[in-house]
Length: 119
Image 1 (spheres, rainbow, N blue to C red):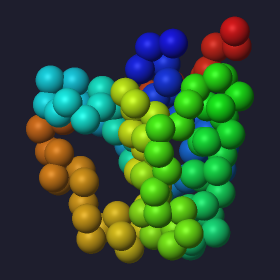
Image 2 (tube, rainbow, N blue to C red):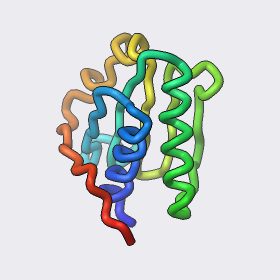
Image 3 (cartoon, one colour):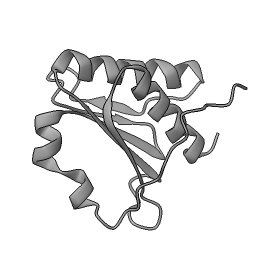
Image 4 (tube, rainbow, N blue to C red):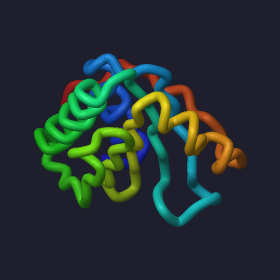
């Protein structure tokens, strides 16, 4: 599975858990951290945890290893490191404070089709 397909699965999993304002940034050529950042938010900590848990479960079912998940207990900003795709699940207040979209302003936003091909 390439990184674009993985990003699509992450976006779908986040959407399935009712993540809000989902944004995918194409980081290729801009950062060596990852090919894609998926950024999303929720209005409370339980929902942020549900989004992170849903993403983790979705990718693990596909045999993808979660390299690291940080911030789950506080659930204000949960980082899910999947190698070439990094997901940032924010509480809406933290998203506005850290404003990753501005920080990585050179990265183009990528529209993601939520239709995931069944293999």
